[in-house]
Image 1 (cartoon, rainbow, N blue to C red):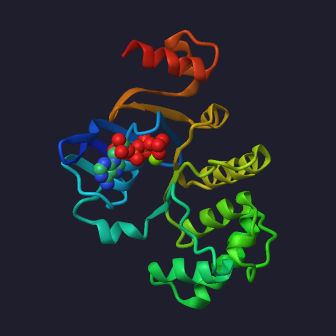
Image 2: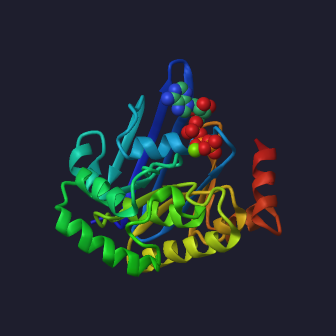
Length: 242
Ligand SMILES: Nc1ncnc2c1ncn2[C@@H]1O[C@H](COP(=O)(O)OP(=O)(O)OP(=O)(O)O)[C@@H](O)[C@H]1O
Ligand SMILES: [Mg+2]
């Protein structure tokens, strides 16, 4: 059995005449924190949506734990968690109601959802009252509840699309503590971010530009290859080369 949980071969996604993801090939190992970086519009979200079976691909192949995503979308749904870049909780519902809704999408019983919710609250250290309405939560707590909702069904791999956008540095740190905890528990985390301090936590990073992957390596190697002292400069150097 491969140690790669994710294999992407020549993935291409087009919207009409526009190519959003342009023939990308890479793999992600089980248990790794894999960072996906790139400017706005680079194609990060589209790649994630393709991996979750949510957009029609124009070419290439994607495998999750050896299973072809295009052929086994339904079967794979239970093994994938997805926290969308767009806020997807229902603001007018309580935390608990949101969890019941999310869990129902995975055919979990209400009893199982509530048990798992308690377990996850403990795991993520969330002190909020489950009967609190989501719109009353802080930005940081909302993102943690979103994360909890996306891993309610205990997926092996979770796609987090800019999970820390717009939250405070303290909340970002708390969120990353959870990502590290998920990874050390054996889960694979595929995460996009525009924050370079967060990118440093990733085992490997892919840098995307105009639908293509222009660099992929550990933070340390990316810095070394580009002769930069920090990741921000490393990325500027890679982008300049193109
Ligand atoms: N459904 C769609 N129809 C047409 N074009 C789309 C669609 N979805 C995305 N695009 C375009 O594809 C390109 C890549 O978008 P994508 O959302 O994947 O970028 P991104 O790297 O996630 O950017 P950001 O950092 O802003 O989230 C953009 O030019 C976007 O406008
Ligand atoms: Mg995006």
